[in-house]
Length: 262
Image (cartoon, rainbow, N blue to C red; front, side, top):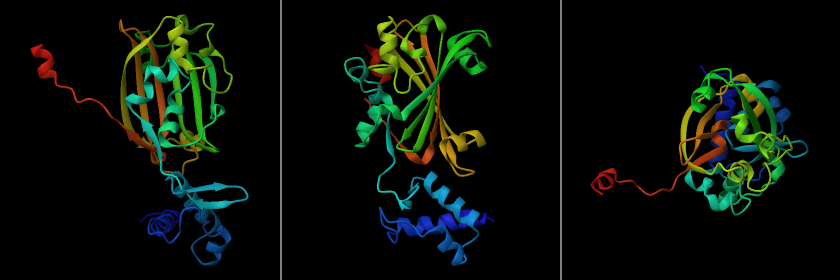
């Protein structure tokens, strides 16, 4: 049997999807639902947090819980890494997603911590280093307004980034064009990437950081970035709130048989 808060969240979600609660409309105050017999204060609060995690509502002090008017963010695939965006302009990846989604953004909605750490096994394997070798970790938390959308931690070899803006903990992207532009200026032009995705339940720490209800899912991204000669210049791990994104890909369909024939 589902917990009481889950049953209430599902009931309210159905009323939202049916249009009974319209976009921009405020949901009943928690005390009103408690008085109506829908559950305790903690039950209603947990239900509202679940609706927020699922992208159906937003909550803020002074405005209560309001039905969300916006669709999930479009998380671009190949197009978000277009060199023209970051090399020739200032459209770093998370900003490219906002632009494609028709959403406002502030550069300060990305904050970060930079530290020199022993490489975990997966990071060491990606970079071809011994486990425990020192790497720089640049951990970012990205928000849309007050709501976190995802985290992204990039790991770099010290010899690639020492003394650059990548190791500067100032909030926001690492200067104009972000980290890829920094690598480009240092002589490490990115050429190709590998991305792997998997969905799973958020850990307690991830749920707290991303403001997710217990049991909510995340999409874990592993991204390996290479130069043309195969040098790995970044390995990144992203944790995305699953319901706050739609993943969008537009690419030319390959024909390996034709390539072999040529």
